[in-house]
Length: 336
Image (cartoon, rainbow, N blue to C red; front, top):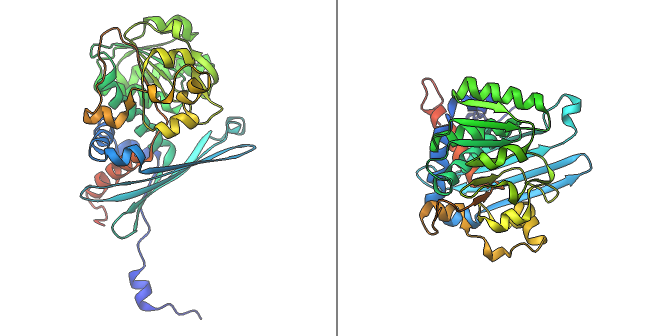
């Protein structure tokens, strides 16, 4: 018979809580995530600039993304997030993106919680766009174009509604049925006028804000389609093979990034630089610099601004910690 040391048994940590997609949606109203991401970028600007690690590991069927970051403050934490992206999964009846995020106590290394990473990613990515929009979109922006109707699109719209008076949303997707379904959800849950449209070219010129959140491998939004004063959030390109924005648009806009290293490796900046449309040092600044005021945001009503969002783990850490703290303060929760 196997005997376990009593001290080891007594000190064995309890299993960490699991926050699935439904739990995260309940724990984290999007306004809470926007505030958490903005606060993290403000207080951890130096870490936001360089204190994170990212890895993409390709195999024939897909790619594994790994991101790690630390977040200081009253309760310092570490987050490690693993996502798989397998484009062929919908044909198998599986989600394209699957994964898990682990939240650790940075003081003693304890595992605090495990979280559904696709939902966490959708929430923090939408929040990052909203943080950028506060400074780069015209404050009176009312018309939003969503290019893409996947999981990320709803989070983008919900987050932008926190910071802008959006009252008209148009959805374009390669699958018109998906666009109609998302438009109906936006009407029901956000109480906004939302419709599906057949193509980007017709909808883009009348838009104040355009979000691209697709898996496109070639540009779908072009400089000639974007009106003066528009704010563009380029969200989909997280791999060198992905591209949503014409390099000429990246060059014409006042362009900001969350991570220069990631944007140069896999974002829209990567394609614009490769095309010779602009140089890396012509980027206007980083998202954390916008938040701290180190660089200015929108400077004129007719200026086109662009946020090249590749996603940094500091944002994951901020959202994960917010979920954990809200769970910990709920009745009957483990006070760990």
